[in-house]
Amino acid sequence: PLALPDLASAPRWRRARSALGQFIFPRVCAACESPLDDSDRGLVCGRCWSRLPSLPSPRCERCGHPLRARGACAGCALLPPFVRAARSLCWVPDETSSALLAALKYDSWPAVSAGIGKRLARLSWPADVVAERVALVPVPLAAVKQRARGFNQAERLAAAVAAHWGIPVWSDALGRTRATPSQTRLTPGERLANVHGAFHVNASCADRLRGQHVVLVDDVLTTGATLNACANALFAAGTRTMSYLTFGRARTSADR
Image (cartoon, rainbow, N blue to C red; front, side, top):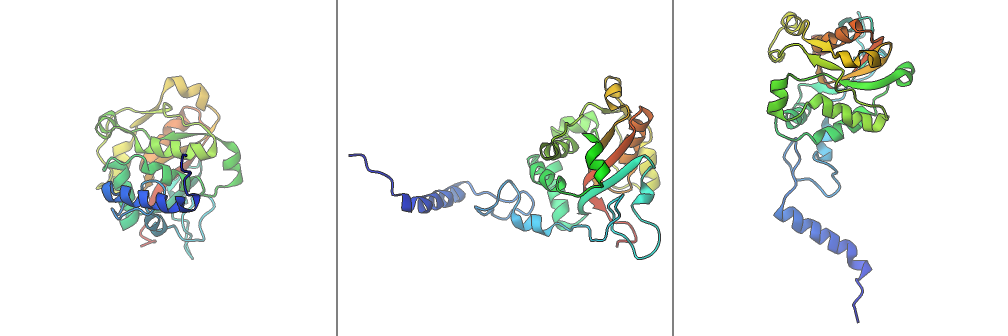
């Protein structure tokens, strides 16, 4: 007769198979390269997620930046008047957040965006933003960068958030008028000049955008130059309101 499996021993067999698979094909964290536990889902270990340097509270209701005891809000000063709100998950640069960004952008781990997007989707927003947002609009990459990387990291983040928010991603809304050098090593003034007029709204999307509130998505908010240039192009084309969503946020001089 056919022997029935011992159900009591099934968990032991699963653990044994898992251990054998980990020995032959070890799973490591895309950020810290430590072995992943069986409890780890996705490509990033629980330790790295827990080590992300969250922005401290209290935070500004509009721009999401930590509030100082005195003086004007450091984040709101960066935003044009038609930008309603901005939110970020963590500080950059930092050992853990920078490693996650490197895995996403440079180390061929685009699937890292799923875990980041799940956490971005949990961030709190003003009630009017939640009620009005109709779509996520990723900041476009220059064509040469997208060909080299194989994907646009902002688009991957937007898609991951959209899966939780239940709204579409309008990847075709914005285009680049020209390729721009990396913003990483530029001063704030150079950043503004670098992206001035670098984005345009695609004509086929103008009617869809007119009068709407969309959420612009990028990987990092530093001075706001890139996101503001995108927002300016959208506003000029008739988009009523924008909000910003990024994985990382750079510290201002007051935060250091």
